[in-house]
Image 1 (cartoon, one colour):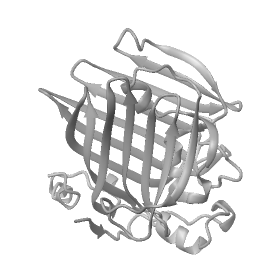
Image 2 (image 1 turned 60 degrees about the vertical axis):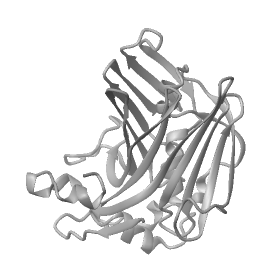
Image 3 (image 1 turned 90 degrees about the vertical axis):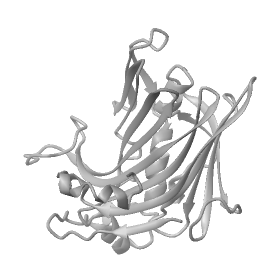
Image 4 (image 1 turned 180 degrees about the vertical axis):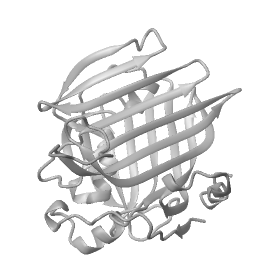
Amino acid sequence: MYKSLSVITLTFLLLAPAVAQIPPQVEDHEAFSDYWYTGVAEITRYDLAQNHYGEERSGDAVLIYVTEDFLTGKQVKLETPANGREYVSVLKLNTVKKFVTGIYDYSMMSSVFTPIPVHNWPRSLKSTSSVQEWCGQTFSQLNFMNNRFRVRSYSYFENDGDVAMYLPNRMLEDEIWTRLRLSPDLLPEGEFEIIPSGFDVRTAHRDWQVLKASGTRNDYTGDLFQGEQLQIYKLDYATTGRTLSIIYEAAFPHQIVGWEESRTTPRGTTLSRAVRTDQVRTPYWQQNRVEDEYLRKDLGLD
């Protein structure tokens, strides 16, 4: 059963942006500010069934959403007075997946930084992804600059190697997760070109490239995922046999209740799934003492 815990903290508030900062697709600007600009993050835990090496693994997935000011030049969080430097309010998503493969652990994390005024900043500014397991680790970073993405990728593994290249101005798969939370109307439909996620590039051992995909948005009619007025966004990569389906609540703030990812190969079709179990809204960066560890139980992590 899905649980939700709201932690209200008044000691650290962020100023709400002007109405012009909010995407025009958002109907209720006041509700948007009241939810995303109150000095807390939204943290959601999911039961994860991750298919890896041809077998299903049980684990945890956590989505951490929070707004912050982001320097557009250095493309890092603004932590000191701007002093004339350009910055923009972004919706940041950190995605964490952890599961066990036999004797050893797998840990995957990605981060994406999507400007909230999408009419002025139509592309996410930065995306990173990393994978750590007992054999070694990989790290990739994409920065949007000069109307294209600069790609830097580093790996312990010979076939992945170290990569320095550029990709054209296309949507990132990783930013679908943030654009959905800003407004589902920002999700691309029909056929389009897209840059796959860092997780997919690493686990499928693919090169960084632009791929063709198609997107559809419909009502969710199943019974596995629980929530109010659910919809499903399906991203289909016909050329690679991969499909990503994100199930979310139609009403603001469009919370994600789960997702499924399927891959079709000559060996058959595999399926990974994440189902929402727990959620908190809290300033987690302030809760780093031993006495705060009990809060992990509210997320189902202990």
